[in-house]
Image (cartoon, rainbow over all chains, first blue to last red; front, side, top):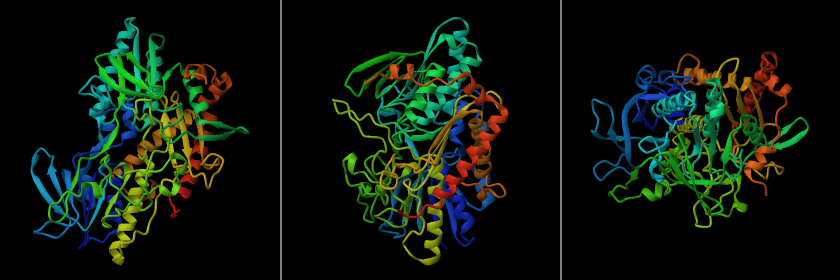
Length: 485
Length: 52
């Protein structure tokens, strides 16, 4: 019997676990370790954050799904990997701390034959003093955070109804944040809600970002081919900001957040401040806090993990100048070079570098989006690693058989810009590949045929469709595997 | 180099016709099919990714 342990039950880990269970015989065990008892379709947290959906619409309990599918589920947080086992037991293992109400705090050592690290991000609010729900700003990173954001938004709307002007700031809470698309989506949903409430003229809506220009989205921007012209995602995004009357502050690193006031440094070295009545600022991401030990108990964390806490995989991590970055730097099998039975997928793998042009302020502050690797790419990585592990178990080889490089993979980003099946709107974008490949596509780094953006009600329908399809798929209902990642 | 305020102020503004089309149910049904076809093509192309 082979035991495959999957750490994390987000898009990547959950997808990997379901596919492993589907492909492996019952003599093998698939075990998922996740500190959260609920699965969360995070893209729809945006709608929770404006009060258009509730927590139950975007979450469901994991345990019944895993019980039905024959997947062992341990509600716990992984804290250490022992890829060589211990002096007493040479079997590779993971140390976990239980998080369920019944067994909370209990520690356990779980052995594995294959390990998939899909722990996702640690929301690093502490990187910016005063940032986050325990500080002075809001977040939509979890369904619970999104509920708080929605309540604060309703309070701001109530004040505007009473005639009081409000400044609402939405964006990135640190110079190295990722997921600019989520903040972009949230700011236009807020704008839509303000109009629906009849208070738009009393709101100063500001999008504050670490992007060098609008439309960068952490992927270095895109070039679209539309109506006989090539246009940039920058112009396309600026048009939406003009149409909706949203102000933008670019190239900003938030240094600290105080009650009603945030302080930020810009790329040109200026230090500015901005007062606010409502601020939803996303945190930067770090890898989960995990240690690694060899058989003798020696610390090998730096061998397995990058300093950011993300797992090192088959990427080229050689430090290079931006001009020397290549699509081939990006990993394709997600296998740890140190221990071939360990894989890192989704946000948990360490990217070789950013996708956007790296930039620093005169004082050395990095103000560059980190590369996004959520949603569609995360699911694909989970599935392909599941296929590789299945083949490796069957053949006894240590060579992965499936590949899913972000430089060979496309992605769709549907950013809702207002809800309602007749009055909603969305900016729907597709890009191929995610990581530009200037050797294959010398003009813009991406296929002009497959990189596209449009705004309209149809995008909103697509976003709705994806919401229901992916929750159906995650619940592993009949035919779930026919729905593509 | 223009500031972001200047760029936004001079960005192309959709015409009334474009805005109507973005909300028109018949037009958007066609766009819905088109977006889904684009996504399916991209999924077919990118999700069977071979090593580069």
